[in-house]
Image 1 (tube, rainbow, N blue to C red):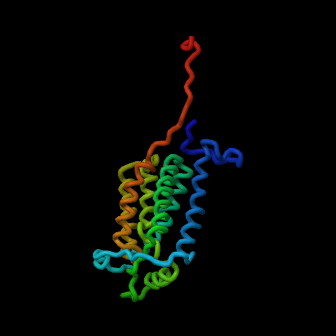
Image 2 (cartoon, helix red, strand yellow; image 1 turned 90 degrees about the vertical axis):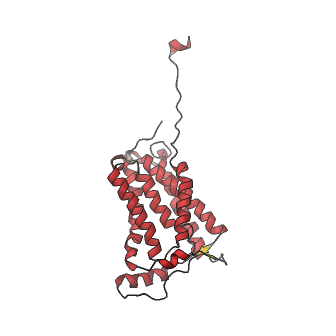
Image 3 (cartoon, one colour; image 1 turned 180 degrees about the vertical axis):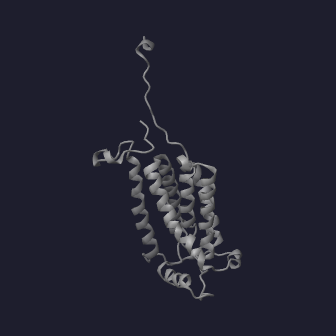
Length: 232
């Protein structure tokens, strides 16, 4: 039995959540698992040595506080993509979540085996405005560790992967918009000095490796019975 693209969630009950129409909901369990694991890596204090990720190209990219706008829009982009596909196109939701689980999962393992940091943030800002003051607060809030590959880039790619063949959004103009937004979010991580060029390239390489697995069609096994006349 195959799952419907738009299930009737009004019929959802605790006892039928594993039915084909609803078992995609269980994929959401990954988020608290990932959040806890990432929090432990960021704040646990058990990692004593970090490897600095940096390259010559990073020095050629100036800090620009206005890129915090697309950088923060990432949260809207990711959550919006998940919510839209969850209610409108379950196969696209599954594809997006498979990509996230694969790439984020591998990234967490990399963070454990090869802890990284970046030292690109400016000591002072060239301008004083609302965005630079926000940047100062954000730098205090967010650590500069666990950066390679960039989860920000992976999340942006995940939205494009999920929406690329999603119903009425699978049109050239929408695909162009998704690609442009993914590129803008990825570039924004460089201009706000949250990531090195190497972090972005590593995320792109990981995305390319995991994309075939995330987009592999689900196999639904059906049992075909021959007509009685054919069995005689």
